[in-house]
Image (tube, rainbow, N blue to C red):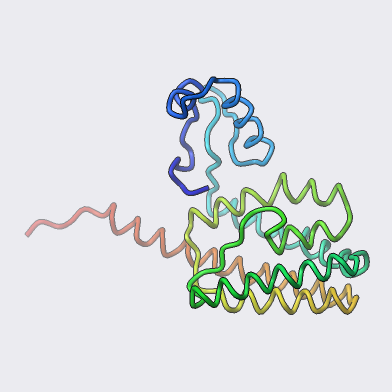
Amino acid sequence: MRGSIAPGSRLFEATLARELEISRGPVREAIRRLEERGLVVRKPFKGVVVLELAHEEAFELSLIREQIEGLGARLAASRITAEEIRELELLLSGHQQRTEERRFVDYFQPTGDLDFHYRVIKAANSARLLQLFVREVYHPIRLYRFWSSTQGRAKAALAEHWEILSAIRTRDPELAEQLMRAHIARSRETLLAAAKRRQSVEGERSTPTERV
């Protein structure tokens, strides 16, 4: 997730075990769990490699994410418990404080229960939807976003989270879905803009310098 092992890199059990000074068994189990989360894939003649998403694939994945999370917000507005609402309020309050302390430079959420999007999907109370979200969307998108270093929407994203929570709190499925889908769409625009900037920089680096 930190990018110390670049996308597309091969993972070798023996090498990792030696570097971590552990046996190959735990390494094999760790790789299996990463594979379950969609963070590594097995390729013919290459073995296990770190997930590498092309920009087009990330765009398509974001479209799928919009559908899944929109449905998740709709269901959460109908099924969430009062305790889960309180927990989401505390979660966003913590996010607000940390993001303000960083002067809205970025808004990075830890995984799982400390992530607003994950908690909303859990509040939808649908095991199948949660499984689909985690396996196909959640971890791959986080990896791509971290690798892309997308920034610039911290303050707006946090405000949108509060709006989504408000719609869920008032039990308004239509509004909750609408706000979540709009939120994901804006995130996608930021993702694409970052990808274009990176492509431009990489293009400049690969262009030979003219000799005078």
